[in-house]
Figure 1: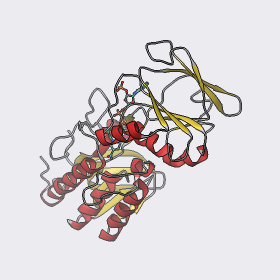
Figure 2: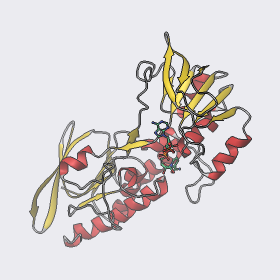
Figure 3: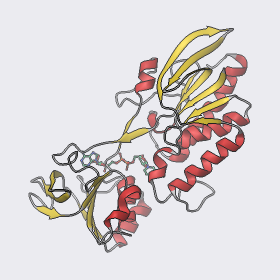
Length: 311
Ligand code: NDP
């Protein structure tokens, strides 16, 4: 029997693993992809106390910290979380994975997000043949090539900056007439001679033969209306969808965007079930805020585990 089972091994899940163990909770973290989404970011400059690091390095530090604190970490894939009848006044949950079943008094859901797809012709066909969702993973394959990034948020901005270190030219394709990136990254883009922003521009299709060769743009207000550009790679950075199927099946309340609704204690509508990070309804989604939600959850899970009272 565990006190606290954490589903998800990203920044939030690993922070919870470290913190809960230090509070004395017997903690098990399921980390299917240790480090989560941050491992796909090449530059992290907004983690307090660290001026600059890479996503993989930050993930590795969080993993080591959770492990050193005594958290048990398994790479098993969780297929189900079920509520069992309360025992001696404490809630009980069964977490089923590919290889076993685990019982706990409390659960933290920190399952993060998955990349959104653009849904245009050619996107699926040329995935891994020019179409990518991770510049850090694939950027080095595009040395001295022409590439594009789709999206106007901070992820797209960072992908474009990273790709400019490899590619000869980077188009940043933005459907609105402004960027939503952090001002610092927007300034870096403005100063970068390799990056050209195409505002009010949307993709109609991606085409090629063995790998992608060009992009055709929709007719519209932008300068590329109806035109084509030859390029060898395109990186989609148009946001994320929450991975909340496990939570939904457990009976956890979601909002219209399928994000888990949490309160300031990181509690969900089910006593003993907490959630943290990008899968939640928090307005501000940053690695550090997800970690803070997870730490908050750990603290309140401690109360449930020691007194049975979670609300
Ligand atoms: P965002 O949701 O912020 O931005 C998505 C971008 O993609 C927007 O410009 C959006 O356009 C565009 N877009 C969405 N759908 C389409 C489409 N079908 N066609 C064309 N463009 C489209 O996503 P991000 O991944 O950039 O960021 C997500 C969150 O993660 C944010 O809160 C961000 O601050 C955070 N973040 C945190 C980091 C950290 O912790 N260090 C690092 C990077 C991001 P439109 O504006 O028109 O909707």
